[in-house]
Image (cartoon, rainbow, N blue to C red; front, side):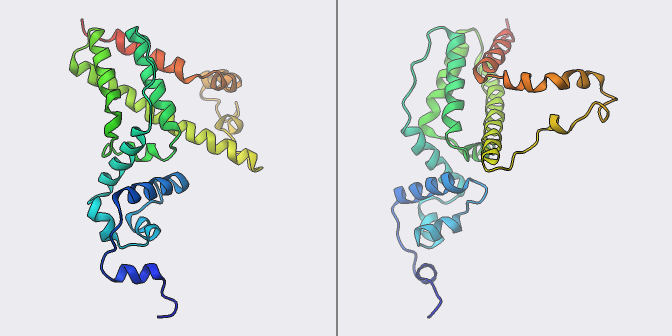
Length: 227
C-alpha cells in the first residue's frame, strides 16, 4: 500500500463521520484562502480527510453548504445603529452591507448565483422593506428597490475586489494598466466626447465614494415610488 495516502484510504472505506460545524469551519477557511472559484466538495472532503459522502451527509448540495457558511458569518455580526430618518436609514443599511461583504472577497461569486443566503442576515431585507414602505412604497415596489440596490452591491463588491488585486499587483512590482493608460485621442477620434473626458477620468474615478453613490441611487428609487 505504499504511496497511498491515508486520506485516499479513508475515502475508499466507509464514510468517516465529521461534525457539521467542522465542515462549515473548513469551508470558510478554504473560501478565505482560495476563493469560491477553486472550491469543490471533493477538495473539502480532502481537506477534512473524509469521503465526500461524509460531507453530503450534512449538506446534500453545495448551495446548502454555502447557506450554512453565510449564516454562520452573519451570526457573528452585530447589528449597526441606524439613523431614524428613513432615507438615511436605507443608505446606512446598504453601506453597512457592502462593507461587511467586502471583508469576504469570495462572497460575490456565491451570492450572484442567487442560490444562497445567510438566514441571520434576513433582518437587512426586513429592515429595508419596512423602511421603504414607511416612505410610501408598496411591498412590490420596495422589493424592486431592494433588487435594484442588490445588483449595485454585487457590482461594487467586484470592483472593490479588482481594486484590491490591482493594489497588490502594484506592491509586487507588476502594476496593471488602466484603460485610460492605453487609450489615445487618435484611437478614439470617432468619439469626441470620450476624448474630452479622457484627461479628467482619473480625477473622476478617484472622487468616487460608495456612500455618496448609494445615496444618489436611493434618492432616485425614492423619487420613483408610485403616488
